[in-house]
Image 1 (cartoon, rainbow, N blue to C red):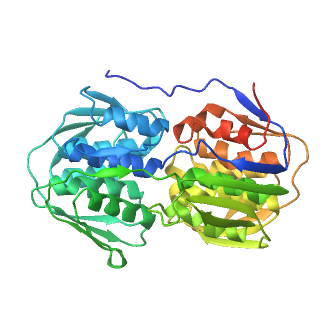
Image 2: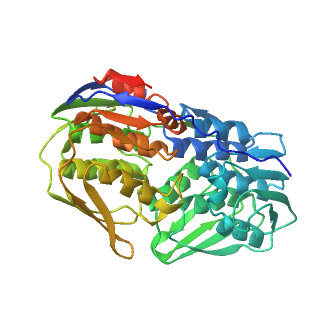
Image 3: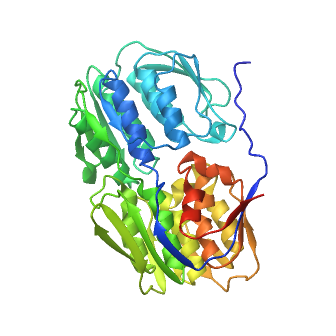
Length: 420
């Protein structure tokens, strides 16, 4: 039996947060964008490591990507990093490297067949080592391009599409990707294309027709500075939305961002947060909120765990679509949300296929404990409830995946925390 990676199952630890309804200050440890960092690291490798990528995210996923993309080891253990698994599978497969790709037990439950099938169609040799359609897999080499056109459902994880886009220029015949059906997470596809342009490759995108065309071309030397992470910034909007009094400054966030999660500004405008961009910062303050939120998360699924707890805590009913991809993330995020929202008197139910309704009731006044399911976004998405009541959050170290300084930033803006 080859190397078997187990989840480093987090010892059951907790962080206890004392309720505080007034939040003020500057968020000093906001992470750089994980999405941009991980793409830039792969593009840097494809450009023969002659490029410079500055202000990389300090998230564990990015540190893992940085180490593994140039690793000489035969077994590549991505732990629980889905982006790293998908990007590196495409990279190793089409650059002809013989690697075993494995990860945590949860990673072995996350489907990869669509990407493997696509890479096999192009000409890569890939074997499944345990369960068909799931990691671990072995990339066995690339003996020449068999196909230069692929058809892929548009509603799959955009990471599959981005992975294929980034490796396409090294293919002798380039690659045309035809996306059929509804396309999800379009901003992430556009982000990938924009970053590729900075490395000298010009993808042709006509997403309203489901067309992506990339010619064989050479990556050029680039100098990239990674902007602050809008996914991480989203949690501070939630704190402002729920606090009685609030003014927070988020430094180095880009008003005109490559990141789709910048849409949190528009969502939170409805949930009671005013955003003022000034001198490269975003200053957040309170305003009136709506009574009902209707939102399609297909382009920003990572924001659901920020937005739904805010709606539940503020008594704002919701009608949501675009949550399908949450089933195959770090955990089944829909089930996790349903379980934890119930603790604050809210019910999330699927009223018709793909249509979700949030009904809110009164929030219990006693302290509650939030389970995180080994998912960083569950911890940070529910942490803003500490503006209303005492809170305990299980496995606080999960935030290291994307935002290691999160708890320190909470302390900075007025929260008292104790690790148990």
